[in-house]
Length: 304
Image (cartoon, rainbow, N blue to C red; front, side, top):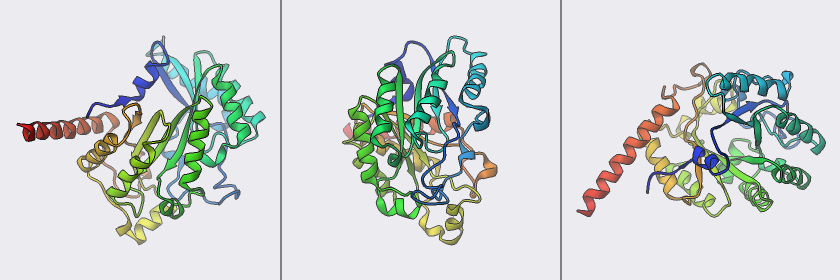
């Protein structure tokens, strides 16, 4: 039942030696901000919570990557790198603009592939054609922000697309030989733990290679922080052990071929509208292992 595949396992099947993602802000925006499908963005969004400090769009893709390479190469001189286009929607531009950004990334010494984070409604046919072209010559993974499978929640958080849009995007990418990652949030307002496990059931038939999970973190100054203040009953607050149990149930519902990139997000405490757990990623993994061990111990007792 446990263990599970990790993102390192996923990469080890594709590369010899250690490979590290380096975040890049390529200066793109989002159709949910510029008025194409909405304004103001998703109610939970604040890119400051996850974009590394060395990502400054004005410096250009190549310069950001060279700084990131220099940072990691001091400790791991043999490491190679994936350019992680992380901030906002990184397929939301004309194909010639995207091509130039991706080529700039691949020209940096040590960069051996692309990881492109985007929204499912930012993958028109000509952009998927471009990604497939790059995938024929180098490693390409597209990380699709699905967030939840429940359309009522997608509307509540001002996402601007439905789950059917994400299903279509995932299938089209996988059909072109592009590795697909999905990003999901556990704890969105109005969703019960049972609703969250329905996410996994809906994802299970889809051709997903990797999955990122994280607990909802409500950030100061966002519309979601205002919703939390006005309607706290919509929010399920997890203790770490309870969340770990939910994650283990989620894992059980997915194919064993899915690799898990992460289970939690750790935003700077100063950005949080309500206190976080104060756990780093490796500390949460220890909690997860302890909860899994207790479950396995109980199962063994039941079989005796």
